[in-house]
Structure formats: structure tokens, C-alpha cells
Image 1 (cartoon, rainbow, N blue to C red):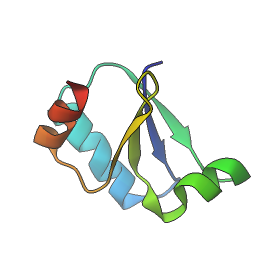
Image 2 (tube, rainbow, N blue to C red):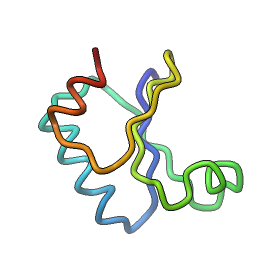
Image 3 (cartoon, rainbow, N blue to C red):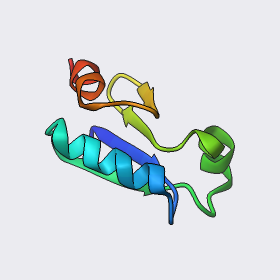
Image 4 (cartoon, rainbow, N blue to C red):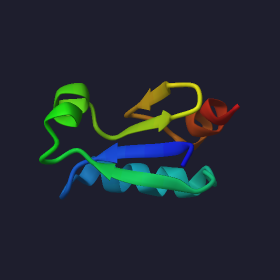
Length: 74
């Protein structure tokens, strides 16, 4: 999957990010929970939610809005 949203369980900011992604009409994406994964915890820690484009290795960190997501998709 090209787009991945890194998030945590019970994360209000992650819930808000999901709403923004819906508003931006992001194509299909995968949710990846970092809880319990030492590598992802080290990489993303308190930065979640983070949207990653696996084809370009670009990342969009929170906070972001629908306009920022649409620009990220270009």
C-alpha cells in the first residue's frame, strides 16, 4: 500500500487525523500502530500521527489539514 498512517491506540490526535484524511479524500491507505514495535516507537514516538508515502519516503507529520494532505498527494 502506498500510503501508511502511523498511529497509536487510544490516540485522539490519530482519530482527528483519520477525519482529516476522509475530508481530503485520501485514496486507500494502511493504518500501522506503533505500540509494541520498538523500531516504530523509536522512529515515530510522540510524532504520531504521521502519514507516509512509501513510494517517495516523504512524511507528513501532525498537525495537518485537508489542504496539506491534498498538497502532499501531488
